[in-house]
Length: 317
Length: 223
Image (cartoon, rainbow over all chains, first blue to last red; front, side, top):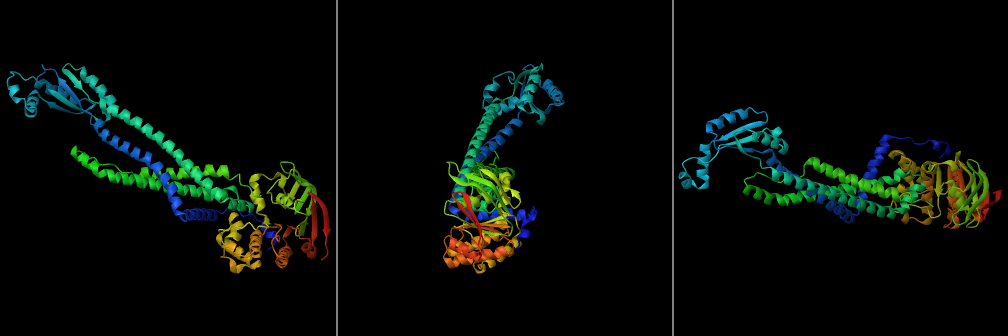
């Protein structure tokens, strides 16, 4: 053991750095595994805090999926004046088919309208008493997909209203827009809730790490005495925070997935009663990845806050 | 190796740890530091290991001006100073091997070299067969030797010891001192604080004596 060789400062060696990180990651994982109950408790609290906004977000995106279908299916009913004959109506339909914003036009002639009315309304007898057909011809207009947003559909309605043959033009989108507005408020609400609960997760992890630092006070002191840098001492705590966050995220994922599993049966049942093939969407892999990386990131941030606040206070004496 | 120039240390509240101490310890020396408790022995060692900073004067260690050393450079300084404590300061949730390996792991040394060096250090202090044990199962003398192995495993040029034999019986103390002499023989500079005058005089080394924070004696004793 000669003193002469010890001056050689060890340079940065990437493979040892990586080896060290892997080792710290595993040992902090092992430390958590040795206290399974408290680890599970902390992770579950984090999981519940994350599952709530995640579940609401999923509910909203499902709701949007349902209403989104209605919005793009916007059709315009153009009732023609009583004086317009079926032949004139057919000519108008043909000319509208050339319109650049219109996908298709379905003509319901006076005669076919009457036939349908007779069949469905049950007023067939009463109608026979009339000497002329009181029903107007109807053009059911489907705008092109690119022009089916509420705004451009309404512009098209205005244009159609100016036609000489037009009597009433109907576009019933008002309630869809209201629903959209409500959905947007709900989305904002979920965002606020998610931020608050995210903050709560940050504090939970910060506090857990703070306790851990207190618990390992002597160890930190001794490691500092031996020449450990702050980065070296910080590392295991950062990994612990990371693991807590990740476990919390996984628990949140499981909670949301199992809730969906529980709900999907009854909802499919309800949807089939409405002749809809709608099924509850589960968490997409992309969203799940965002959830997991977000929760792990929160864990990292929470422990960083705790570590930077409490570690410098521990100095060897 | 160590150079104190008019160094003072005052603590908040007015207590004086050291006042105007000037001294020089050359490389490869083995020096004892004696004095009553509260005379400033620990303070002097803490200033060298940068556990505390001086209030006045200049401290140079191993060619480095500690007064100007930035906080983030402290860890690198401590890696070149092995420290041994009366209460050993071992990590009780780790094995003897892991305790001794700590300075090497902290310095970023590779796995294989760590194993080789730790075993060499444990062999030197005669505890090679206890590497897998927990420190708590060892006797006081053995625990101190683990502390010594940890202090020298990274081959620092300077080793400080604060009352290393404080809790040991005379025979064990003598053994520890022999160990220190062995290290000194291969070129390690040692500064050992102790109040055990009998032991120190028998070693026949240079002795610095502190009293009330001042250096009052610097004697070379013949063995």
